[in-house]
Each structure stands twice: as structure tokens, then as C-alpha cells.
Length: 457
Image (cartoon, rainbow, N blue to C red; front, top):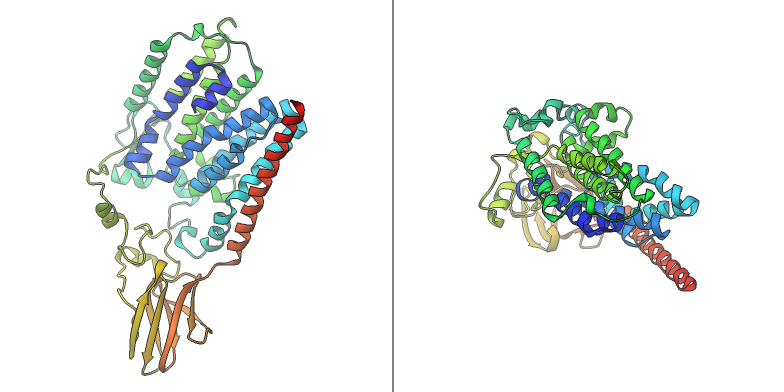
């Protein structure tokens, strides 16, 4: 954030204030230390780098490598926040066209395409498998339109600490809420920093329309986020329905904190000699900072954050299913939703009238020697996903099936050896090819720009 604010404002003081406000927003600390939402917290890292790339494109006419890389990293860190942040990128496109015309707009679009290509190694397989897990069921994970609207922020909650907290599921447990005191304390800290470092009227500089317009993009984006907090249903009516995966409208508090800091950097570029115009815009920026309803979470604060306690509480077990959320978002749809909380994971392969010798390999893969006294079905302690493949000792594929959500396959009477391995779907290879292509395109763009700079020099 400091780098972006310094580039836009050309002033260390403004950059320091803007960055300090951004990194001290209470929602950021709740993301890390209370909610444990590290993926969402990582998204806050990429917002400034993305807009720094936009600023360099506007000011220098060059597509910097960190623009597509940061945009791709945002999509990989938290895809839903990346989609919502994309609206700010759309609002920035007229600004790019205004200063760099069609060539600049072409580079802007090319950067977005390269960013998407860089993520394909992960996103394409994820999209291919999504239909096979419970996260694809919006009702199950509270990502339906009614749930998102139910979790909206009420207008009166913006101005004091509401004892009823948020609405919806969070309200039932009285764990999530908004603290007016936190927001007020944050504003006081920001004002104290300004008073300690100097006055705005001492800031030298010249009027820069690019910075003014950048601040305008921040204001407009902030307003849209703010309205979404209050009226998500109005937006969802005409937005793609996939955007309901945000689940809770208050997740836009992170982008709102960034946009308010961006306004501070953009409007701070206006010198004091422009009469009262500069102080007014700066006051507006501070009001935007103050109006970010700061999130708080109670009762779930833990003091024994050890690996053992986290594993015990958030994972179903430490065996083959380690890594899946305890609510079952990524359990296969063949696994009965009503039994997810009561799941009992078998500790070894089993089958009626069959003796089984088995050896566990890495990542859940295993070898089995089965001696069956009759045709039977073998069930192994692996969740049923379509990427599993079972082959007999002759290398022939054996059909797999789900038994209450666990991987199973049928064997014939006699003794045989079976191997369970992971397979990679076609989107996996397509995604890797597109990612390599994106990396090559990025390198080509940078080489061309370096050659052009050398010729100009």
C-alpha cells in the first residue's frame, strides 16, 4: 500500500498515512487472529499491487509484470473476492483509455488474460471437480440468494455497536458483529497520526488529474461496496448467480478499507493552494475510512492455538481425510449430508468373506492383496471422488462406486492384487498448458517493453 500511495501522491507523508490506515483496519486482524481466514486476508495483499500496475500503465504506458501476477494471485488466494474486485477493474478501464487510448486498453485487457492463464493450473481442475462436492450445493453452504440477503448489514448497525450483532446464522450464536468503538478508535488513531506527522496544508505538489481520477475510482468502488452491504439482493438480481458464493456481504469490508486508503492517496495529491478543495476531499476520504463498519467476533477466541487443538476441532480425524473442513464443504455429494457431522472413518479396508493385506502409500494411494472366498465388495477408508482409479494386477481398470461416501469396488472370488491411484482429468493438463502459455506471454510482453525502452534511450 505504501508503494501505491507513494506512486500516486509522490509524497512520503501521504503514503505513510494511507498505508498505516490500511494495515490497521480491525477487519484485517479479525481475519488473521480470530476467524483464521488466511486466504481472505491474503487477498488484502494483492489489491494495492494490482492498482499500482494500473497506475504505472496510466502514467508510463507500460504493463508491469506485477499487474497480471498480482491479479492471478488474488484469484488463487480467494476467487470470490477476486471476482468482486473485478468490478473495480472494470471501473478503471475508462481511466486507462482516457490516458493511453486503445493501446493502453489493449495492454490492460492482455494483462487480465495473462492473469487468468496463470491461474488455470488450479482453476480448471477445480471447476471440473466442483460439481462432485457439497460446495456446489448453494443451500448446503448458505450461498443461496436468500441466505446472502438474510446476512445483510442493517443501516442502523453502522453507527453503534448493535447488541443483536449481524443477522442470520451469525446472529443466532451472537459471535459476529460490528463494533462502532473499534471504528471510532481507528479514526482517532488515523487523525492522531496526521497531527503527529504534520499538516496537510504543508504538502507541496502540483495538481495531477490522474491522481484525482484514481481517487474517484476509489470513491465509486467504495460506494458500490457499501450499498452491497445494505442491499445485496438488489445487486444479485442482475449479477451472475455465482457471486452469491460471497455468503456474507460484510466480506467486502476488506476491499472497502483498500478503496478508502486509495482515496486518501489520490486526493492527497491535490496541493493546499487549490483553496479549500484539498481539505474537503481529504475530509471525505477520512469519513470513508471511518464509515467502514469494523467487524468483531466474540467467544471463539482461542488461547491454545496448537496444531493438536486445531486438528482436533476443525478436522474430522488425522487420517485419510485430513484437510477437509469439519462442515463437509468438500465432501463428495455421494456422502450423505445429514451424516457429515457423525461420520465414522474406517481405519482399514474391509469386505465380507475376504482377507485383505494392504499397504498405504502417499496421498491416500494404496496397494491391496485381496483373497475373496466369494464375489464381494471392498470398501477402503478413502472418500469417494472420481479421480480415484483402481487397477488389478494385469493393469485392467476396475469400476469404482460409492458406499456411504467411501470408495468401493467389486472383486471376484480368488486372490488378486489391486492398486489404488489418483488420476488427473483432462482440465488438469489443459490448465497446465494454459498456465505455461500465460507465463510465456508475460515474458514476451516484458521483453518487448525492455527493447522498446532501450531503443528510446
